[in-house]
Amino acid sequence: MGVARVTSADVATLRCPYCARTIAPATDWVASGQREWGCCGFAADADGNRVAVLLLSPDATDGRALVMALWVEAAHARRGLGKRLVQAACASFRGRGVSTIVARAGVPATCSAPPKGFLRRCGFTYVPAERVWILDVNATVTDRPTAREFIHQLVASLRPLSPPEPAARAGRR
Image (cartoon, rainbow, N blue to C red; front, side):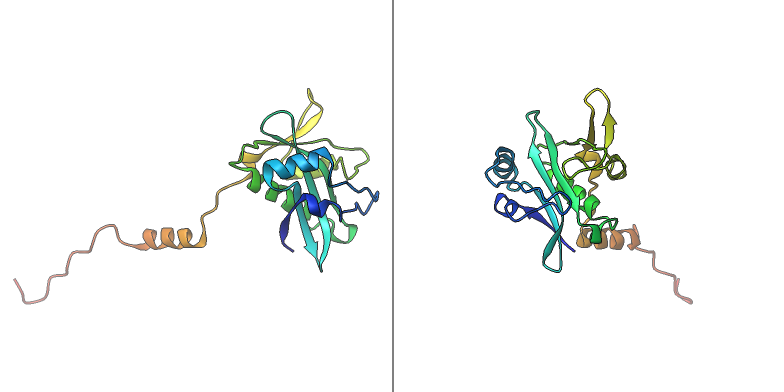
C-alpha cells in the first residue's frame, strides 16, 4: 500500500467510513492547502480503494498545519497506515515552511479529532495552554541516505586509508 497526495479534486470522492462526513472541494481550507502545498492531504489505497486519509489545512499561524480529518477503515486499522500518512506529511512539509502539525484529540475519537493514544504514538505532544497536540515536523523526519550514498559510504569505509607497503621479497636486498 503506497501513500499518495490528496488534491482538491480528490476530496469530492472521500467519505469517512464512520460518520459518512464529506468535504466540499471548494471549502476554504482545501483550496488554501492546494494553493500553498499543491495538495490538502495524503491517502493510502488498497485494492483500488482509499482506505486511509489524512487531510490538512494551513493554519493562520505561520509554519503550522492543522489536522482536519484522519481516518483508517476498520478492516485496515492497527497496521500503521495512519502513522505512515503522518510521516508522509512530515516528509512533504520539511523544508517547505511547515514546522508543526497541530491536532485536537477527541473523546470519543472522530475523523476530525483522532484518539490521543494514536497522536502520542505518532510523536505528538500535548500543549495544555493551547489544548492541542503538536508534532515537530523537523524532529520527526530523519534524513536517510539513498542506496547509492549508502553503498558509497560502505565502500569508503572498507577501503584502506593508505596503500599498503610492498612486502620485501626473499633474497633481495
